[in-house]
Image (cartoon, rainbow over all chains, first blue to last red; front, side, top):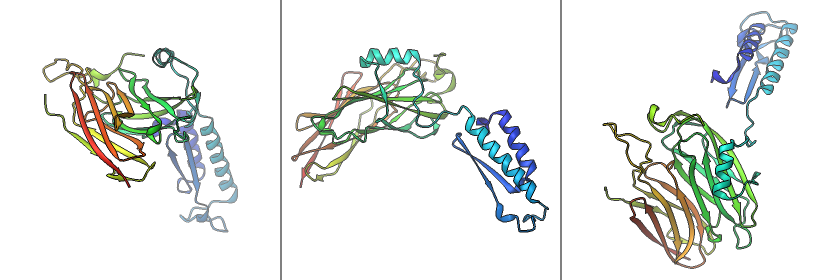
Length: 218
Length: 108
């Protein structure tokens, strides 16, 4: 949990905690991306006495609050990937996708990749891919969905081919992941538009014992 | 080779045009070719590389699986049918065998 916080930020948080007397301010890091700061204002009574008996005057409390705001601003400036943005494809994956799917003009969106943020074991990670807004009629349906891995020894995961009889373009499967990585999902529609999405999955323990599954630097 | 068993889960009766989920599972080691046995020998690749589902002879869904698919592969997809009939499922093994299973669906 701590690993995501950069050292400077840690110092900032420490300063912040000292200033406003630790019990007044509690920090939770939620899903690596956001930090929620909660100040228990109810514990400061009208005379500025906190619940623990420590004298906290208005100025101190305000200082603490401003420090908290600073911390939040610092966190938001951290280079943490946003959940929705699709990160740049590695060059080798671009080549692979172009060779296998015959195109490289993928737009972001429409594809929904559902995977856990964290997987305790990479042996069996639930994967669900869908294009929920496709009507799946003869005129407009999802032709295929393709899932690629960035850090597995074999980057191909699965290809799914649909027909209008599929009703809805949604599949679920269990897959193996060698290590923490981005999973990319690509969709090709019957009207020849192409869409993509990405999902970051943290894998605690890779799919196989360490030395066999450690992939080459890719 | 150990006997491959299949398990299916789909509603026996559906409404006409209703979208329903079909869940399939097949017992298979899915050796991906990256693993070593206890005596240091590389276990050769042996996976199911293709899955097909057809309804009354018409293909409904097809999937190409690669090495990343977990052992005892589970596959869930959706379908909608206009008339009663039979689902046929086919799993294509690397060793050339085709595992099959089928299920009846009645439109009410």
